Image (cartoon, rainbow, N blue to C red):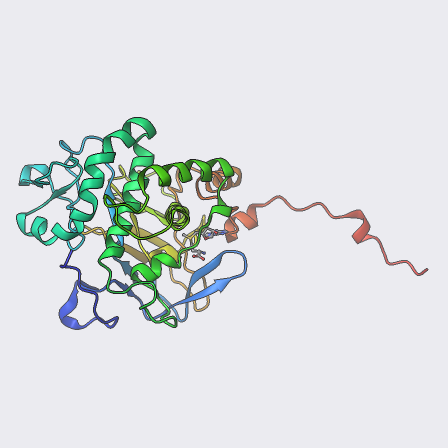
Amino acid sequence: MSQVVYITLEPSESDRVDDVPKRQPHWVHPNLIESVDPVKGRQIRASDLIPKGTRVLVDHPYAIIPVVDEPAANEDLICSNPACNRQSPRHLGRFLCSNACIPDVAWCSSTCRDADKARHDFECTWLKRYAQPIRNKWGEYDFGMLWLIVRLLASRDRDPHGENVAPKTQQWKYGWSGIASLCGSSDTWSHEQVRSWTTLVKKYLRDSPVLPHGLTVDRVLHLICQEEANSFGLYPRETGIFPPPHPPVDRGEQYAAAVYPTAAIANHSCMPNLIHKPDQDGHMVFTASRDILPGQECCISYFDLTKYTDLTSRREHLRKSFRFICQCERCISEEPAKETNEWTSMPMMDI
Ligand SMILES: C[S@@+](CC[C@H](N)C(=O)[O-])C[C@H]1O[C@@H](n2cnc3c(N)ncnc32)[C@H](O)[C@@H]1O
């Protein structure tokens, strides 16, 4: 994937299209800072006023996979070349893998296919050998998860910014360094879940001639834990409109899943001040949905807010799917008042 060029962090005018730098690993509004919350971990804050409607972050996926039911017939399949990733409608013509690995892999042009050759070579033999057996035995979700891990490893294989190369003081991490710093560990998930992922890693993701990554089983398992806590589903319409519109507006069918090293720092809120939506090239774009004051946290919504409305269902959904108890302003304000403890409310007695 020699087409992705990671250069400087300062976008030059010639790199910008509609204010979005084309060749940067990410673009972050100058009024955003990263800080750490004692409960939620890393977070994004506004250092100065951000007016409603401002685009605040654009991030390139470090790895992205299509998520569609019938890839050969689907109109929304994304181009496999990471420097393109646009949705390539079938009627405009598609270029398939000459090794016929899986129909989910396609390019929008021969130029994209040629440019992506080295990156695709990393995954091709693995896909050809394991995709169908994994789909048959473990199902589509686990196949997608494992393929996303393989694509993370493929990007790492070609990453000029390896774990030890990016400066430690760099505020907004990107590249493999950003992936390595993602939250999530085996402590976050149930023993049963971790056991099942360990089996999958040992069976399908070991360092081998089919998948030469040089990492230990434990490190790949850790990568799954990170990916599961930080990946995004890509939908055609916005996520996080607040208050949720009446009647509810569906965000459409998921067409891809991806890991974004910088966008993953955004915490969740059930009354978010950011809307997120992928652009036509698979970049994740955050936009302020109201004025954000200096010091305020900038949050997205991790789910469709029209689907889970009351406190219990929202928290239960986040607990099951993302393994945390939501501590956003809205959930805290809707918590039932705590009963006053009789003993602590008794007047002090002299003894
Ligand atoms: C995608 S990461 C967000 C960045 C993360 N805070 C970090 O340190 O890298 C998701 C994790 O952030 C934390 N988090 C996000 N939103 C939260 C919320 N509303 N309440 C509590 N924890 C939250 C949880 O630990 C969750 O697993």
